[in-house]
Length: 341
Image (cartoon, rainbow, N blue to C red; front, top):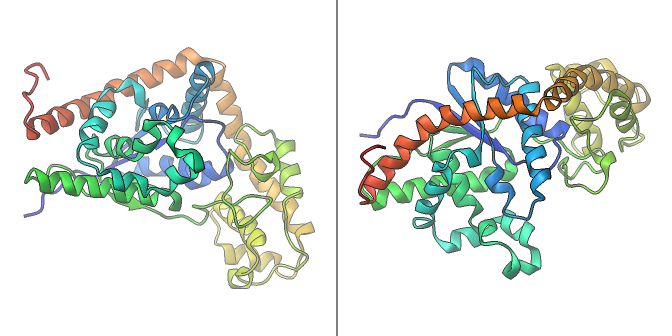
């Protein structure tokens, strides 16, 4: 008989730089929505992941607070959800070590993200970068999370989490860990660059014009949309007509994701018109949606002590879930369980 687990959603964002419109539409907006489903939601600023490559300590602290501010400004309520930074809950690091003994080295070398980040100089990359997916598995399974909202680029890591859970359960003859399911949905789950419709919008792109940052003001947002790469063709009646027009398709998808409208309904209004008409309308929509988020982030960042208080309270709530699961994992593996755990 297969064990059932209480539904629980976990996700995290790395504090390695500013967030973009893509992060908001593909992740943060969805995170806020999950709060009202009746499923427990746990959201984490994954600062232990960030240090797999060197980080300036002061910048890391600031980025961690900024990501927390973005969660809250995007609608994540620290009272409805658990919001914390990873390094405050030691169970993540302990569970990652336990999973390092379950995961196979070959699994880690197959991870495309390791290959991309390490490049040709993989021998000089940190051991942490190689073991990153084992820590990600620990992040998820330490809470017995049953579902994780992921983008296409994270599907491989979640598959490895499932492999680790399955191997642990098999090795120890138990059904202790759930086989976590991915949550992949939404019109603009994968928001593309404003300069190249074949690439994902990224905070690491050298060109700031390629993305809309959550910290951009209204003028910057409007200017970036006006300068976004498009083509000379008019807009068609349906999305099928944008099949081979990635930049145009991206802008229509962004409009749809920001307004909640169906993309075909948007195209029906703009059919036959060029981007001279569409871009100003999209800029108005983007500014209206993003301005309150930017303002709230600025307000939160002006009081770092309050952000720290919220993260600390969230860490206490997270630890109350994680610690018993960690202790049971140790016991299953044959370790003498802490009597005060």
